[in-house]
Length: 302
Image (cartoon, rainbow, N blue to C red; front, side, top):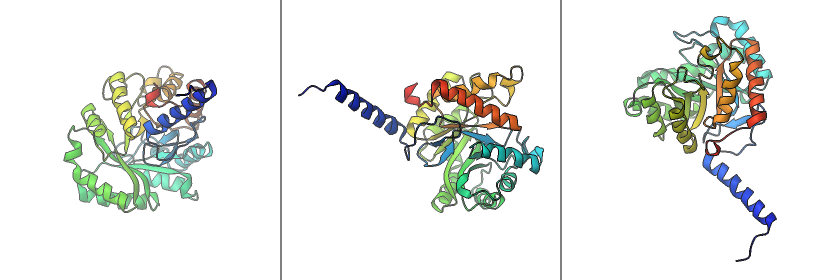
């Protein structure tokens, strides 16, 4: 066999590396690696393109309200539009937060292809979940929901216990009412079940550097999240600031938290519960610094 010259070897190596990168992630559509927080990434195999950073609307969210909705519609809209003006197209809502109608009003007049909506149902009854989907479409003022999440699974057997709800969500996807379905887990046993499920297209996972409001030790979760991402499940980081606990004494620690999301290599994107205009600016700045220093990471690279 003829020996490769150096140029041929380097070219072949780069081609293989590129193929491995795309193959390992099984991206629905390859995109350039993001260099800015507003650059688009793909959530696993879903084909859904979101900004690397997204806006959460559920800080202290319960009983159909949250810190964001408690701002009132005018201030909520100002916050969403500031995020949108800075290239953020991903908005994370939930019935539990009461934020569906708020995001609808905030995005009035914006072209549908300019934003991505994720919302969540807490229903465990199939008929109620079916009714939720139709109600959410009306509350959001859209003809489809990009990502619908089964909210707050804690049971290790949730993939069998709530199979009826999962089937309803799958039927909604086939009917074009939603583009993808997934789960947020609030126990490690539930996370393990999610990692083994072919139904799960998107995982929204609690992930930060100090295990604040997380489901296990950081290293233990990282190993599981690595498996999830390599499998092609879309991975979204949440509790990035540990519900704010990680920045109460040291506000500058938020930049460490943003860098952690980027450097860990186990999430495609992450969302933060933003409550003020400056929170948007701080998230963008901190994420930009991290991108400049370490770049966007994949699980197999870490």
